[in-house]
Amino acid sequence: MNQLILGDCFEVLKKIEMASVDLIYLDPPFFSNRNYEVIWGDVGEIRSFQDRWSGGIDHYIAWLKDRVEEMHRILKPTGSIFLHCDWHANAYIRVHILDRIFGEQNFRNEIIWKRTNAKGLAFKRYAQNHDTIFYYAKSDKFTWIPQYLLHDEKYVKDFYKYVEPDTKRKYSLDNLANPNKDRPNLTYEFLGVTRVWRWTKEKMQEAYERGLIVQTKEGGVPRLKRYLDEQEGTPIDDCWLDIINVQSKIEKIGYPTQKPEALLKRIIQCASNEGDTILDPFVGGGMTVIAAEKLKRRWIGIDQSVAAIKVSELRLQGQSDLFSQPFIVQLHKYDYDTLRYKDAFAFETWIIEQFGGVANAKQINDSGIDGKTRDGKPIQVKRSDTIGRNVVDNFLSACKRYDKTRFENNQKNRESVGVIIAFSFGKGAIQEIARLKNEENTIIDLVKVEDIVPIAKKPRLSIELKDLGMDNKQAREIEFTAQGESEAGIEFYAWDWSYDQEQGVFKPEILRDKEGKQVYKFKAGTYCIAAKVVDNDGLESMEVIKLKINGGVHLTGEPA
Image (tube, rainbow, N blue to C red; front, side, top):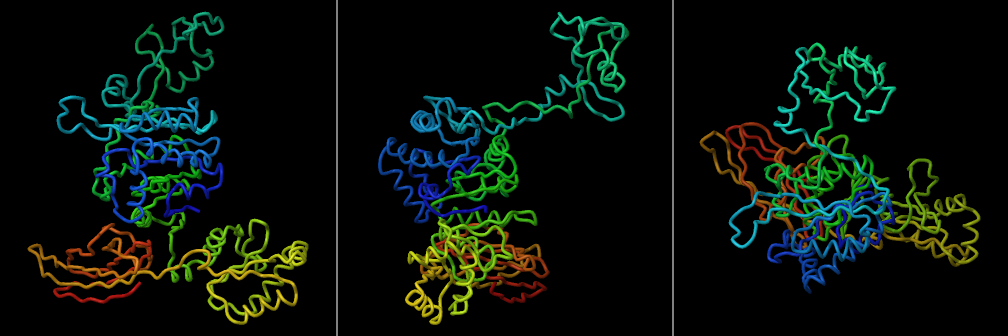
């Protein structure tokens, strides 16, 4: 399943299966002016910042090399990596990291991306306006899909001079002569002209009858029509001058190193196919996973910053539709209510994987077994609290049916015969587990969810509204003040001014409000507004407010 994972990518990558990823794009923190490197400003990012800057360039290269080695391990043999950097360390990165880990023979390109027009005057050097993207394959058998640009206007004007009167299709006239003059079988007369032709006479006649060969004047050399709309375009080279940096208000999220969607789409489309898995170990503002989602790829995004993960999550929610793939967000701590009441099968799959087991591929007709441990012991998951003795009795029977031989061997060797995972266990279940162990030599492990993943309380949220009156365009101004409370501390707020309660999907227009205060203007009508608060553990709460504007203001608040 697609995943956003909070954590140091070095530790997270170690847990990802070998040769399981098709494409990696990474935009690691540049070895540049440290004053501009802390972006989100949360605890995880600051810690990572301090790790990188505890030494000079040698320390930075060692820090990055450890992570790229893990990336090489999880790439498939047909996979590729694109590493984004700038002039401060690109030479070190290529020689000391990429050439050594991937091998010089697997170097594909040094891509130059002109990120902006040169600004200001550089009196002692040329102005710097580009980044470097190193492209390496893991082996000589890699996914490569050439990309093309539309022909520029001057090229079209110079070479596609002809237009069909009926269809208005533009075309050029191309040479039909064969460059190899020693081809007797292709030497013949056609439309009164004898040449060594490119095709056989039968094929030439067929193309002529289809209107693809024209003779512009009597006795002139026949030529081939090439339609502009059938051409692939100009092949993209390693200098990318056509992708401008993030400028659109819709795309820009206030993340200083955010990369444009067009850049990520080009990389993903050239080195992967639909259904392939894309990984970004420094997901930042989430553009890689957003582009991957739109291009129907699977994806994994990792970041040490809570803000990065939550902003990426909210942006994915904001673009979601009926065709969007489900995804999970893996945090350091999890809210009890969210886990307790989420989709049953999704929870079973997720908690078994967190436990280190393997979940069933299907959820029906599972005979009471939801998955198994790596050594084959059955696992059952219950989302209820205070699980009773009847669950233990039923699970014991299921374990015997599941694999009788394994059950008897584990019983004989005084090893666990299975695992029950639940939020809590009642006195009856605990007593029965003890009796089975003491009297029947049968061990069943009872594991609480909080022993697998840490559970915390989600933040509390309240919203206050203040009517600021009508503006000169007869719109009513309302001031919204959000107040969040959490033991972990508040990270940010987000606002959806047109929340669809029926769909229940939060699509924020304001992504990262650090103060929790917004002023919004409303014409007469009924509105549904939703606000979210995110704390420093990544846990969140949402409040829904209904507004009716009709001269005055009528308010109702509905906790979501």
